[in-house]
Length: 299
Image (cartoon, rainbow, N blue to C red; front, side, top):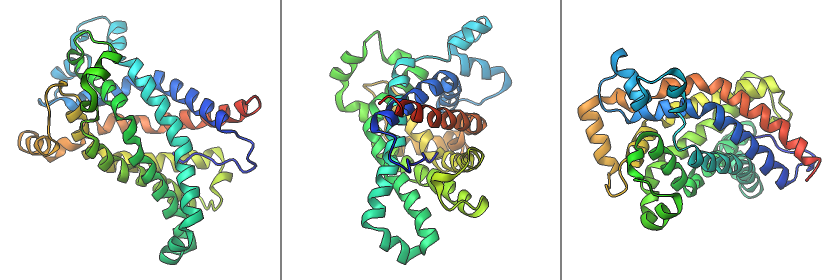
């Protein structure tokens, strides 16, 4: 989802951080269970059927009461909160910063290569791609979140500080696959959003798009992003959910996945993600865009 730009410069950095951070927390509390379901489906290597679906999704709580089942979908909430808030702040502030940088130094190159209109959309997409690549710095928090969701045994009662001290660089396992996923995924997110605004909705000044226009463009961008990134996301998840001491190579994951589960396994968990894209983006967009101007009155 492409964040809006302050046309009058009234929104301070603090307001953007507070608004996007609060949006990330609220989004997390509502959508974390769906993310857990998607991660567990992606990590499952057995055949999925109606009889095995509950144990795969709810694990030990498969036969527990409904309330217990629901709460079992919130493992690693602390790690997820740190990751989601940092990610939202970075994405809301990072993409506009990269876009401004490209616009300042390389606008002529994009315009000469793609033309005025397409050049503007390519700059948006490229800025998104650079932002996505930079997200690798948040990988340790993402890795801990995924392990808590699908492999809690890996923690063995250790706290987060002890894990960081003992595991060190192993928390960056899968960094190459993460960058490979984020680059085209973020490119598709911001690029498809810009294309939708330009060619479908007729919006030339993205900062003046209406709530409805932003909603439509964001859904189009997010669906494109998730679909493009799905295969690499599955590989990244399986690398990260292994025990800390077990080093899993991405090439090995790809070979085993194709051999044992077939090519369609690259898209495991895609349906739950796409089903939540619409309401998730509407929620995060409207809340962030409402809170940022509100905080701007105070900071």
